[in-house]
Image (cartoon, rainbow, N blue to C red):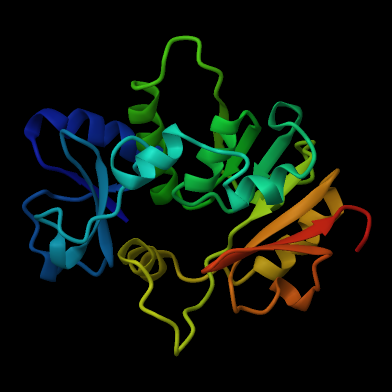
Length: 255
């Protein structure tokens, strides 16, 4: 995976990102047909984007982490423990400030960000450097919009959750693995298609669930498409269900 830039003034920042995340540098003028990569990271004056190579010279089809603008930005600015299925599943009867949550498959970080805004301490694990770079960029832009002194406990760990779960004490483990698309399912949204093309599915998700069950102090919460089978064919103790997704809840010490 390479990183490019749209303005010569951004080259130094792009090189710094490449160094920190172990990414190659992609020539901004390179012909997309000359590359074997599926996508390229592009640093623009506004944000960091992951672009399919066919769109490498324009923002159409780009994937970015957004916590500030649009509908997702509104959700992030106005989290509601009562309305959020996520918070009902993760928090249970506890107050958010009492909980440390390991998001073992953080991805673009939307759910983890909501949990942090609600007051949880979040340890966000991302093993793919390209996705971690996108998430860091979104977090930096969101930080510029927060009020001084606003509590926000979110730690991004560029690491495999299998190494984090046994070594970082936590109350709740949260899993939202990237699953293979169902043949008859509706077309998944753009960003998931791009990420799946670049990263593939989480083939070790079943193993990750077993590890999470062994180390969470209170519960493990798994986000699933509403009609998908339980992860690893494990029947949850409880389910919080919405129109499109559900949250399978496993109590620690019960499996």
